[in-house]
Image 1 (spheres, rainbow, N blue to C red):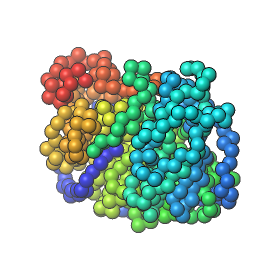
Image 2 (spheres, rainbow, N blue to C red):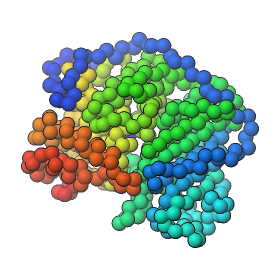
Image 3 (cartoon, rainbow, N blue to C red):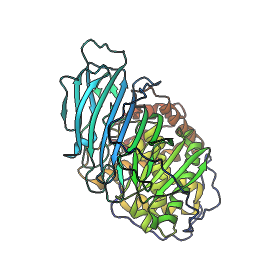
Image 4 (tube, one colour):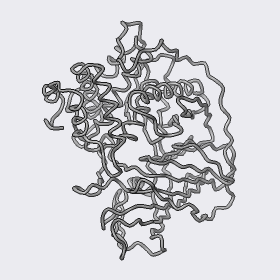
Length: 491
């Protein structure tokens, strides 16, 4: 996520050309004008008329091992109420189980009706406290044997602006379902409390199977989702393998356009008044995906959806990210705008969040610093004459200070956290590149991303892995850099 408070807009003139990295040869300067291309018509599947819960016909089984999720969702688009049947197929690593229930953070949103094992027996001893739903493994079950849970619950989306809200223009479903967080032998379930700034949820890899139906048929409603739609006769069906999250958004105002890059379908969903800006967000996403696929390894999903958000800032999920409405509204054609920069940032999170998982509460720099620095790589490739000005308005303007390896709990407000983790993190990567040189730097980044991709489910990339991979690429002494940027001398 890139939280930005107080959008800034900079009119940039022509500046000196910045030499691009060896892994990203600069292309000719691109035009990001406001001439819209044709809107791709979309015909949603006619939803079911009945409101009774169907039986889940697909039992989620994961080739990965830890978990697979199946969902049947019936959404009342008039009220923002969703009735959900969820199954979780998993191999228990512990006799004490914990599900993270992020919707329960807001009173009245999450209403649990029942939780049962696959044989129909009730789950005994379940306790929902805050965002944690804890309960023991069922009697007679053994560790290492696959278990299946079934949950029925209702979500009443709160009115307001956010990734799990009914904003009045869209219904957003981000972090909307109970899920199993990462489990590690030495420290158990990775469950953290929220903080004043930053993200705290720790996601494991899993497979997703989602069916969405509307309680009342209406062909005007469109769904933006983390995966390509596989239409059924009475709803929308999605499958997303090997991902850390599944998000979607529903609106009767969306207009959608598309393009393709490297076989990936880029879909841009936006409100009618921002059709031209939507094309820009789409094209920036496509270009960033092409660059980052080259720099960090293959993009793992069939689609990537960028969704105009009726709330501030940006927020990433696998295969989908939200981009704040204010960025669309303030865009006038200047490449040095938040619409462009944050689209590149959120696209980079498809690698540094999705492919390379980390603990965003304890080591947020591993994804946020990388995503911020990836913005610079985007400008060096596509707008080299703006790269220096990007650094001026995105980094230097805030006089960043603080430790790169801060946790989200080390700062009591937004700006000091971002300055330390995002911006000082970008400064560290810039200086590291200067010390070891472009060729080594970009080989290292790609290798680190690939090593993160190879991590087993249940494991996370860490600062230790970052510097371990770095040491395999260079013997340059970076002790002074570590001392300057990191509180922990052994990050």
